[in-house]
Length: 281
Ligand code: KIV
Image 1 (cartoon, rainbow, N blue to C red):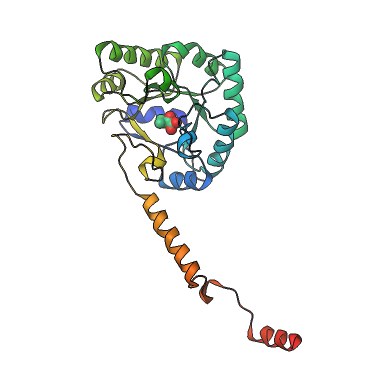
Image 2: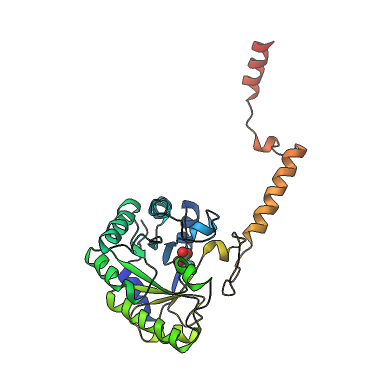
């Protein structure tokens, strides 16, 4: 069996100057491919609400849905650390409820860690989760679960007050004990400062080239999701175009009767065919 990366090894990568690779996965075949490719962290992001379920935001996704998707990712994974997003309002009411929901996610899916969106205000929750033995990844900057408050998917930390807030939040999360922090949609100078002043790895998404690692939504970078694509997403493939081409070809071949040909069919041996014809005549 292939050796799986551990959370301490993810932290060591920063010390060794090795960059950390992260992509989202929500199902067995995708997780198997990303794991085979050698990705360090598979993130079962609540972005699945948008790119898999076709919803308008990440708000409606439930703990049960996160567990359902995470199970298949864990089953397929041979190599990576698996991190699961805690959905909106699954950790805000009380530390008890946060532990209960995070505990369910890890116990029922077999994943390694959870990710929570928020800064200094969620430090007590993070400490409680760690005390219960649950590893946590942080997430600051643009918080998709708070788009209502932000007034849309906007770059964060663009003025001095906002940048200082992010720097303070990153410090609070590090002190609370997260093993890594996602920095989403923030200016590269702010991400560089946070990266250089923290001992734990920063994982950027729309945060420039100076983070310790990088995450993208797989459905965005492979061109599967045709919704809004932010500036920071590089299109590594256009699988939507490939799928459309293949499915159109299938439709026309089935209509024309060129598929399935004999090549794609089962047939009887001559002896059985002869005997059957005699029986039927
Ligand atoms: O839900 C998600 O996919 C995420 C990434 C954008 C970091 O949180």
